[in-house]
Image 1 (tube, rainbow, N blue to C red):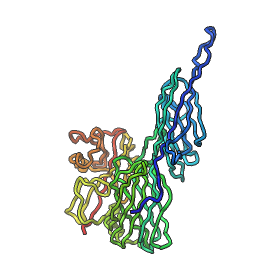
Image 2 (image 1 turned 180 degrees about the horizontal axis):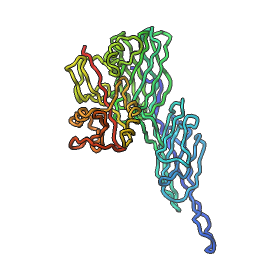
Image 3 (image 1 turned 60 degrees about the vertical axis):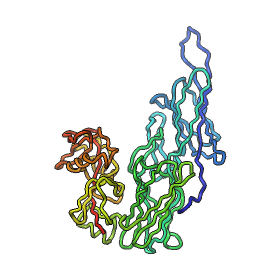
Image 4 (image 1 turned 180 degrees about the vertical axis):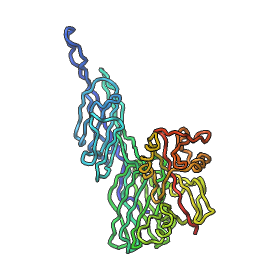
Amino acid sequence: MKKSQTSWRKFLPSILVLVGLSACDKQSVDEEKEDATTSMLQIYTRTNDASDPTVSYPVNVYVFKGDQCEATQTINDANETLSLPLSEGDYTVYAIGGASTANYTLPSQENATKNSIIVLNEGKKHGDLMAATSNVTIAKEGTNSTTLTMARKTMLLQSITMHNIPADATAVSVTIAPLRENIAIDATYSGESGSETTALTKQDDGTTWAFEGEKYLLPPPPETSVTITMSVTLPGGTNNYLYEIEESLSAGYKLNIEGTYTEAAAIRLTGTIVGATWEGVKNVSSDFKESDRASESEGNSDEADDNSEDSGVTTFTETALPAVGSTYKTCFVLSVNSDVTPAEVVLLSPKEEVLGGTTQNDNMVRLEGALGRCAVTGIEGWRLMTRSEIKSLFDIRANVVPSLNSDSRYLFDEDGTMKAAKMKLSFSPAQSLTNTDILRPVATVKINIE
């Protein structure tokens, strides 16, 4: 087990918001009356962790009154203090730390909403993002104060090491998916199809490939299995090996991955996932067997030849078939046909997306892109469910996908016509479409039993 080489402690930065009151003399009764009373919102950063007083700067502050952004300012370092004049009322203060204008495009005060996305600029990588939120009530009299405690919003990929890679390998990379794609001013996430691919560097011994550094990643969607895919490029093609992380990952974790390639037999993966307090360790270990190899080979490999007759169908080799209702390659097993060789297994994607159209044409235009975003790495041929498949899903939904929304309508294909069916009470396909119908695609894979 590889231990983390760096001692980390949880940052406990906070923003203290102090409100002082000032009053203006009232105008005479003969003059136009106006309420000139304002409060000064003073903002500065501090941390109660004396051993590591680092805060992720700059800290971008957005002050909302209801849905209206009243002010925005930036704190560039610990010595800087901001003062914002505000009238009395209820405010919500949002702070995003670590989002510099060099790496991100930030919403302006004029167009900012609470769920405005902090856009990562092209070619840039996420930094150590932190966020905080607090509600502030400013009155005409008295002193108002609040403390915003910053929380980390990213994971940290710290190292990847793969040992005993064949000497004739020309490239090795590791992909982690799915990950969230965006973060907003109010620190909420969106998008569920993000991924991060890290190219490893060949070391001096000729058989070790490694990455050491810091990569900050947005966390995966909640209750979603995370897959690590290792790609090894050899003279005969590129082989992809998939491993599903059973432990949940969330913001505030750091990840070290270490594996050993053992000829064509197996790959051993070990690693550590350290919690948000940077104390306590979850151990991650698994074998990357040849049966975990996805059929995305390039060149003239045997596996590519095996799939040549079934374009878009992925073939795996296992010691046993998965059961209906179980999880296979992070997907839900919808049906298994063992009467043919190789066996045919229909997998339901763990991802879903609202297609958003109200007509056949609307949804057909959106379908291709949505299928790509709902696809699972290493499996090809994603498509709409058929009528029989969505009926099967309805029959076993409680055991297979208890998270399916019973009030929502899921799309399927019937003789080339797109329809939708609810997962509630009885199976009743709808004839018309709505802009809230959900795509949950399936893919048929083949499995050889060794």
